[in-house]
Image 1 (tube, rainbow, N blue to C red):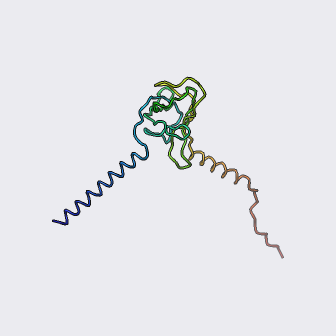
Image 2 (image 1 turned 180 degrees about the vertical axis):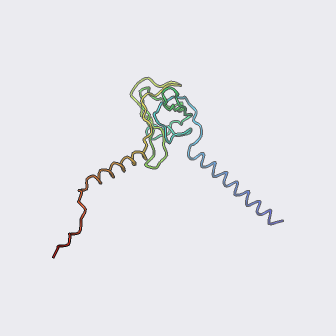
Image 3 (image 1 turned 120 degrees about the vertical axis):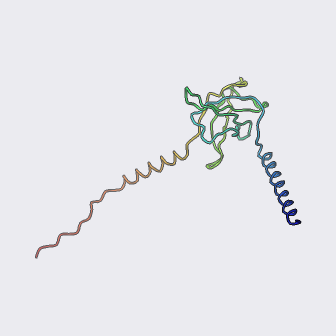
Length: 167
Protein backbone atom coordinates (compact mmCIF):
# COMPACT_ATOMS: atom_id res chain seq x y z
CA UNK A 1 0.00 0.00 0.00
CA UNK A 2 2.84 2.39 0.83
CA UNK A 3 4.40 1.66 -2.57
CA UNK A 4 1.25 2.87 -4.37
CA UNK A 5 1.26 6.11 -2.36
CA UNK A 6 4.87 6.84 -3.31
CA UNK A 7 4.16 6.16 -7.00
CA UNK A 8 1.13 8.47 -6.86
CA UNK A 9 3.17 11.26 -5.27
CA UNK A 10 5.94 10.91 -7.84
CA UNK A 11 3.35 11.00 -10.65
CA UNK A 12 1.79 14.15 -9.18
CA UNK A 13 5.21 15.84 -8.97
CA UNK A 14 5.91 14.97 -12.64
CA UNK A 15 2.56 16.44 -13.72
CA UNK A 16 3.18 19.63 -11.72
CA UNK A 17 6.68 20.05 -13.18
CA UNK A 18 5.31 19.52 -16.71
CA UNK A 19 2.58 22.14 -16.11
CA UNK A 20 5.14 24.66 -14.80
CA UNK A 21 7.37 23.98 -17.80
CA UNK A 22 4.51 24.53 -20.26
CA UNK A 23 3.48 27.76 -18.52
CA UNK A 24 7.07 29.04 -18.57
CA UNK A 25 7.45 28.14 -22.27
CA UNK A 26 4.18 29.85 -23.15
CA UNK A 27 5.07 33.09 -21.35
CA UNK A 28 8.75 33.15 -22.30
CA UNK A 29 8.14 32.83 -26.03
CA UNK A 30 5.53 35.61 -25.97
CA UNK A 31 2.92 33.42 -27.64
CA UNK A 32 -0.72 34.15 -27.25
CA UNK A 33 -3.17 36.58 -28.72
CA UNK A 34 -2.18 40.14 -29.45
CA UNK A 35 -4.81 42.77 -28.80
CA UNK A 36 -4.95 45.67 -31.20
CA UNK A 37 -6.31 46.60 -34.60
CA UNK A 38 -6.62 44.43 -37.72
CA UNK A 39 -5.12 45.03 -41.15
CA UNK A 40 -5.30 42.87 -44.26
CA UNK A 41 -2.59 41.77 -46.65
CA UNK A 42 -3.11 39.81 -49.89
CA UNK A 43 -0.41 37.33 -50.86
CA UNK A 44 0.06 35.06 -53.88
CA UNK A 45 1.36 32.32 -51.54
CA UNK A 46 1.38 32.00 -47.75
CA UNK A 47 3.48 28.83 -47.45
CA UNK A 48 4.76 28.39 -43.90
CA UNK A 49 2.34 30.93 -42.40
CA UNK A 50 -0.52 29.92 -40.12
CA UNK A 51 -2.77 31.48 -37.50
CA UNK A 52 -0.53 32.80 -34.71
CA UNK A 53 2.51 33.42 -36.93
CA UNK A 54 4.49 36.49 -35.84
CA UNK A 55 4.26 39.84 -37.60
CA UNK A 56 7.50 41.81 -37.21
CA UNK A 57 8.80 45.28 -38.02
CA UNK A 58 12.59 45.36 -38.26
CA UNK A 59 12.77 42.05 -36.35
CA UNK A 60 10.55 43.13 -33.43
CA UNK A 61 7.23 41.35 -32.93
CA UNK A 62 4.36 43.82 -33.30
CA UNK A 63 1.50 41.44 -33.96
CA UNK A 64 0.34 38.08 -35.19
CA UNK A 65 -1.72 36.46 -37.93
CA UNK A 66 -5.35 36.34 -36.79
CA UNK A 67 -6.78 34.39 -39.74
CA UNK A 68 -6.08 33.21 -43.28
CA UNK A 69 -8.74 33.09 -45.99
CA UNK A 70 -8.87 32.60 -49.74
CA UNK A 71 -10.36 35.20 -52.06
CA UNK A 72 -12.45 32.98 -54.37
CA UNK A 73 -12.42 35.53 -57.19
CA UNK A 74 -8.70 36.30 -57.43
CA UNK A 75 -7.42 33.17 -55.63
CA UNK A 76 -5.18 35.33 -53.49
CA UNK A 77 -4.55 34.42 -49.87
CA UNK A 78 -5.81 37.07 -47.45
CA UNK A 79 -3.96 37.33 -44.15
CA UNK A 80 -5.72 39.25 -41.40
CA UNK A 81 -3.01 40.66 -39.14
CA UNK A 82 -3.60 41.89 -35.61
CA UNK A 83 -1.20 44.75 -34.81
CA UNK A 84 -0.57 46.16 -31.32
CA UNK A 85 -2.47 49.37 -30.59
CA UNK A 86 0.71 51.34 -29.84
CA UNK A 87 2.22 50.57 -33.28
CA UNK A 88 1.02 52.63 -36.24
CA UNK A 89 1.71 51.31 -39.75
CA UNK A 90 1.98 53.84 -42.64
CA UNK A 91 -0.42 53.12 -45.51
CA UNK A 92 2.42 52.81 -48.07
CA UNK A 93 4.19 50.04 -46.13
CA UNK A 94 5.04 46.68 -47.66
CA UNK A 95 4.76 43.17 -46.27
CA UNK A 96 6.63 40.03 -47.21
CA UNK A 97 6.80 36.50 -45.94
CA UNK A 98 10.31 35.62 -44.87
CA UNK A 99 12.01 33.15 -42.58
CA UNK A 100 14.53 33.15 -39.77
CA UNK A 101 17.51 31.61 -41.54
CA UNK A 102 17.44 28.77 -44.06
CA UNK A 103 15.49 26.32 -41.93
CA UNK A 104 13.84 28.81 -39.58
CA UNK A 105 10.17 29.43 -39.09
CA UNK A 106 8.31 31.82 -41.37
CA UNK A 107 6.97 35.20 -40.30
CA UNK A 108 5.50 38.29 -41.94
CA UNK A 109 7.88 41.22 -42.11
CA UNK A 110 6.45 44.72 -42.53
CA UNK A 111 8.69 47.42 -43.97
CA UNK A 112 7.23 50.79 -42.96
CA UNK A 113 6.72 53.36 -45.68
CA UNK A 114 7.18 57.12 -45.44
CA UNK A 115 3.57 58.24 -45.62
CA UNK A 116 2.06 60.45 -42.93
CA UNK A 117 -1.26 58.59 -43.29
CA UNK A 118 -1.52 55.52 -41.07
CA UNK A 119 -3.57 52.39 -41.69
CA UNK A 120 -6.81 52.32 -39.72
CA UNK A 121 -8.63 49.28 -38.40
CA UNK A 122 -9.48 46.98 -41.36
CA UNK A 123 -6.99 48.82 -43.59
CA UNK A 124 -5.09 46.94 -46.28
CA UNK A 125 -1.42 46.63 -47.23
CA UNK A 126 -1.20 46.76 -51.01
CA UNK A 127 2.50 46.03 -51.56
CA UNK A 128 3.08 42.37 -50.63
CA UNK A 129 5.50 39.60 -51.53
CA UNK A 130 4.57 35.96 -50.95
CA UNK A 131 6.68 33.12 -49.67
CA UNK A 132 9.62 31.89 -51.72
CA UNK A 133 9.55 28.17 -52.53
CA UNK A 134 13.10 27.17 -51.59
CA UNK A 135 12.68 23.52 -52.52
CA UNK A 136 11.42 24.53 -55.96
CA UNK A 137 14.42 26.81 -56.45
CA UNK A 138 16.85 24.07 -55.38
CA UNK A 139 15.14 21.58 -57.69
CA UNK A 140 15.37 23.96 -60.65
CA UNK A 141 19.06 24.61 -59.90
CA UNK A 142 19.84 20.92 -59.71
CA UNK A 143 17.97 20.16 -62.93
CA UNK A 144 19.52 23.05 -64.83
CA UNK A 145 23.08 22.35 -63.71
CA UNK A 146 22.72 18.61 -64.36
CA UNK A 147 21.51 19.20 -67.91
CA UNK A 148 24.18 21.75 -68.80
CA UNK A 149 27.12 19.74 -67.49
CA UNK A 150 26.24 16.63 -69.50
CA UNK A 151 25.79 18.62 -72.72
CA UNK A 152 29.16 20.33 -72.33
CA UNK A 153 31.12 17.05 -72.39
CA UNK A 154 32.75 16.34 -75.76
CA UNK A 155 31.33 13.36 -77.54
CA UNK A 156 33.85 10.60 -78.29
CA UNK A 157 33.18 7.85 -80.82
CA UNK A 158 33.03 4.31 -79.46
CA UNK A 159 36.28 2.45 -79.69
CA UNK A 160 36.38 -0.70 -81.77
CA UNK A 161 38.97 -3.41 -81.84
CA UNK A 162 41.25 -3.35 -84.90
CA UNK A 163 40.38 -5.91 -87.56
CA UNK A 164 42.79 -8.82 -87.73
CA UNK A 165 45.18 -8.57 -90.63
CA UNK A 166 45.11 -11.27 -93.30
CA UNK A 167 48.38 -13.25 -93.84
